[in-house]
Image 1 (cartoon, rainbow, N blue to C red):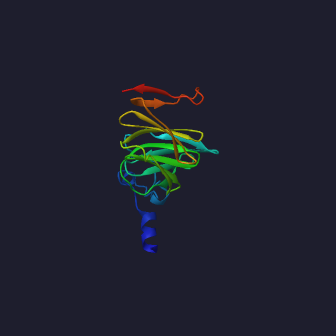
Image 2 (cartoon, rainbow, N blue to C red; image 1 turned 90 degrees about the vertical axis):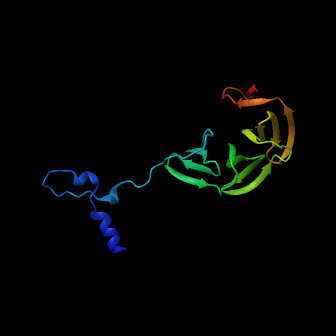
Image 3 (cartoon, rainbow, N blue to C red; image 1 turned 180 degrees about the vertical axis):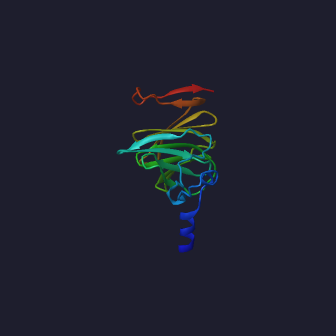
Length: 178
């Protein structure tokens, strides 16, 4: 290890070897960055949120969710691999992922609860309000669950293609039909 670390200290970078000056300045590679925050994600839109004073971004790489702390520029959590994730959301300190026909609630990287037993189609979108979770499937059916109890509140056949929650609307959503 001592030999390896001394070789890292003394290696010249490519820009050092191209200089024509007679000075023998050495750039130490140990002082160069070795990590950068890069995102390799699926086509799902990332979710930005704040927890306390820290800011986070939640993304998916198709089979796992990735939670990055933007203030510290580091990966906080990565879930165990699963089937393809089709939607993601945040509820307080929990992460919600849609996998096939179910919504999984994660506490850190452990599964806490599953929703969607009444659904038979792939989930396309998830949204949360206080203690209520809304999700839609590919047929456009809207499901409403109480998060704390896991009870289905309502199921409405609306043929929804997309839903959004504007910040100026209190407990309201806008949706478009298929």
